[in-house]
Image (cartoon, rainbow, N blue to C red; front, side):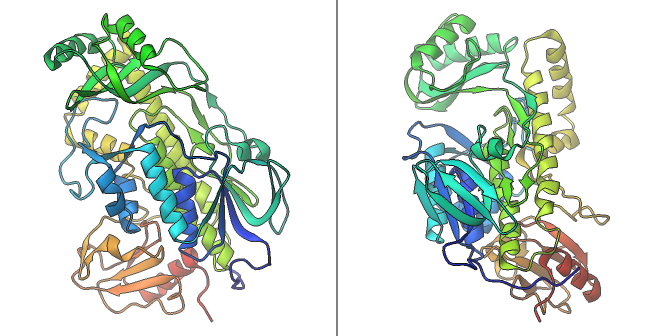
Length: 488
């Protein structure tokens, strides 16, 4: 592989390194990841103010792990409510499998405006700039960078542009990337509110209806507050959030009563549109998050999928800008993340079918419920939903290769506490290996007590295992593969 000349970020006056369109969770996480490597980042958000409506989003195990790696989880936890991780696949009531790391084996429900604020604060504390009320309206790219045009005519220059601007992404449309899939066929109302009838009455009516309507529930949170899910009347563009009267009307249509619902905390409507971008990258323009994939929110995977895109892309794009990236490193972003999105789209399609009131899907649901009594089946589906089962294709090797590294015990505490700088890490139980030549990009921990079943592992900045072994020459080859040529 040819040696690439090392450059510094922001190589020309007035030229940014990366412009990110969209300051949702994906854009904010990406900005923070880039800033860990000194990349000059500007985030453009078309909305002048953060969203005012409150919707609860769920952080799954893999997202919780990634936030723990960057020291973010302790900031988020006080704002969330923990829920059991079992029963997340198509709402089939099964407990979580045994043996999951108890530090992360839960779902964390957080109000969306809160998680967006915390992630944006994290990015700006690291030095990212955010400009609100700035909509991207056009761009042109060449061999050196991208010229981005904003509403009002302002033009900015950067080396790369990343569209994190949602399902209706302007960047994706201007880029001409196809977004094939299925349009929304079913709309569902979801929210949190109080009810005006006794809990026993609610439970009895829900149990009666759930036999034939899986897209319906009232689940108590305590203190009279319930999570409410009910089919909507029809398909809409969801330009306006639903009202409490919409919920009352649909509850009466399905259950024969509106349960006296009142005092909503948040109300939303979602559909089951399912689409995946043909490509995640065209030249110097990339896509991440909902700009690259949309799917029904069943299983609560959407925000997590986008945030995990950002953790995968951030260090790779930074490496490209800093000048040490191997030639094909940036291409691995699409090669790794698009198949993950394909799998999420498929599992949400399957879950949606399992919520159908038709006899065929109901029979399949009963069969799958039986199968999930087997621990291996239940574990497989939980790992799929929570993304801890993702394995990237790094070639032949032990099962751990390509998977995320669990938060094992090390001499200095827990492994994830060592990954806050977004660098690679060689975890070396032999004490004989070295990262000389890559020490500006990769840390080295010689720890014979580490809770590993193998001699040594090389971790990428996103916590995935890039190499397993104990041979220095073999290690050097994999260091070059992921972290470029050694420094002279």
